[in-house]
Amino acid sequence: MMEALLGDPEIVALAHSVRPDGDPRECIARAAWTVIAEPGDSVAGALIEVLGAADALSLAVDGSASSLPAEGNAPTSRALSDARARWRPRAAVTPVRAALSGALDVDAQLVVPGDTCWPAALADLGPSAPCALWVRGSAELLVREPRVSIVGARASSGYGEHVAAELAGDLASRGAVIVSGGAYGIDGAAHRAALGVHGATIAFLAGGVDRAYPVGHRTLLRQIAVEGAVVSEPPCGAAPTKWRFLARNRLIAALGQATVVVEAGWRSGSLNTAGHAAALGRPLGAVPGPVTAASSAGCHRLLREYDAQCVTSAEEVSELWGLSVGASVAHEESDPDRLRLLDAMSTRTRLTVAEITRRSGLVPDRVRALLGLLHLDGAVDLDEIGWRRVSRPRNT
Image 1 (cartoon, rainbow, N blue to C red):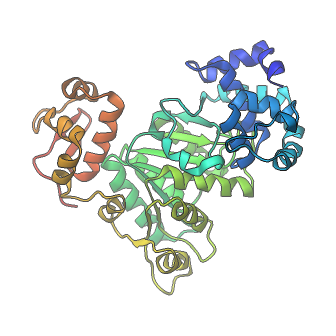
Image 2: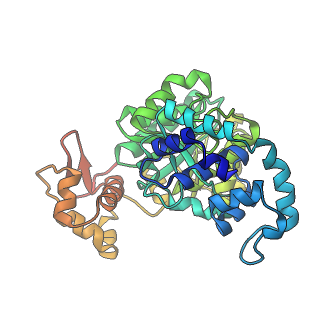
Image 3: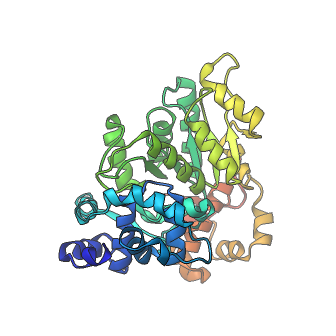
């Protein structure tokens, strides 16, 4: 199959377009894997880890089990045989070409492991980690810190949406990237609040990034694609399914440095995201609600059964991953890069990221990450002109 894909001039040209600075062979192979394997397919992940995406694809579609390496974390012959039965019906040139063409139509790019915008946090998913991500918008948000996942019920109450907006808006205004699933209810409230303060937000979809789902969020998702990032594991053209929603949740949990459930019923899908976060060792927070409210029963369950932390403010959310107002001094002492960055800044003159980079001698990505953390910590401030150091952390 790899030979057929690489022998198609249109596919090679499309690969150059959706991943201009990358190896087209790697791009084509990983794009093909997003077509033939469902999200979270651990057999595909293990095979790619051992052989690389291109050779794994050749073995999966055209090779034999006898070619399977015996060493490392390679899947067993039985597991590979079963997986082939899933993959081969989808293994064709046409759908791969359609996925790449669909991405080009909506100005999406393919981000793969090893790229500067590939989030290292996804490695915690092991062989179930995605082999690639389709991204519309600012792919660099995937590696900007801090990142907070805020999720909750689709059938949310006014109380839940209000709290979600307060948390997301406050955190985003201080530099945090708000990660959620683009759904109705709490997800939408969190995304809108982040955009409302000109902050950063990422929406993970269960279908292709070219398919707005839910349809009622078409305008919102279009705005996120312009001002933030819309991300999916399935390729363009892929429809959202129940399984893909569940698989999508593991990415939301893995990417966030903390996950907060704002409002959730007893069997809410948000508990699936919370379960992934707990399994990955990510800090988990839950917003309490009235004990009589069925819409908060899931949050109370998390507090009781999952050792989630009770959170009611952006400050308490920030404490989930070790940041709190007034903690700047301790951080400066333990991280010399923070001290270098703050020394390069002024309390009166606002500076651009480029100027702070020049003054501090740090790389731009590190400067952006530290500014986000320090903003959330209250040690720096941002407006339309630029960044400045504040004389002391602000109270919230």
